[in-house]
Length: 300
Image (cartoon, rainbow, N blue to C red; front, side):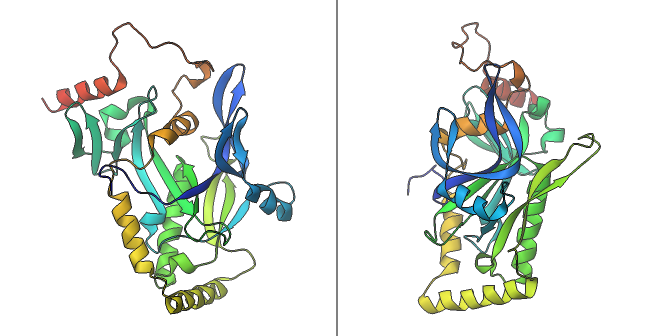
């Protein structure tokens, strides 16, 4: 296994509740009030829709607000990883990933493990550069038992809700999280900060048409069937754990550009033109160099 390369679950497509749109010659993130399932192929008008998007939409009138899913792993943190993440908005590369206690940060001396005080208390995270960033892998359909769809989010409501649900479902199912028939569901709420405008976030519930007792019985039956067939869930979880731990950062370089554009736009994103400008020759330090200088001053 190549060291330094995170081995992540195979991805067949993306699940989103927003997209990047062009407005007045600028590319801006725009939130939505429904799910969209896309392939991993991007055209001139954005990500191409996955066939499952239209298939699932047929049974839900015109808006896709629930998706039947299963999970790959019994361990909640393997299905859903959430970190505080700081991306370089110019290069798109991750610079610092932490959990509120420790972090891995790119410095001039290479990768270092350092204390992580969380964005509210970290001088490197000023201006909203560092955000909570979660990735959830789920199975849709039965065609590929190891091929997943990934939902990415920087929303506190989605991250908090998904983390709680996963731990609760693991507990009540007797560690049969990967066997439960579940459903991603879009919910809305209003807050004082939203001024009455609905904020949409993602929840994870028992699949529609089933109560909790039925779901637990179905998970127990599926677990027994898998064990009878020789399916080793414990070994699968361990393989995933080793794969995630093999690299410093989870997202590959070919993905981070689109991730930064959608989830980590610059504060002045409304002023960013659609076309890329030529590299600055003014001698100004890059964000990575600024972070390194601040880190050195903090530890001086």
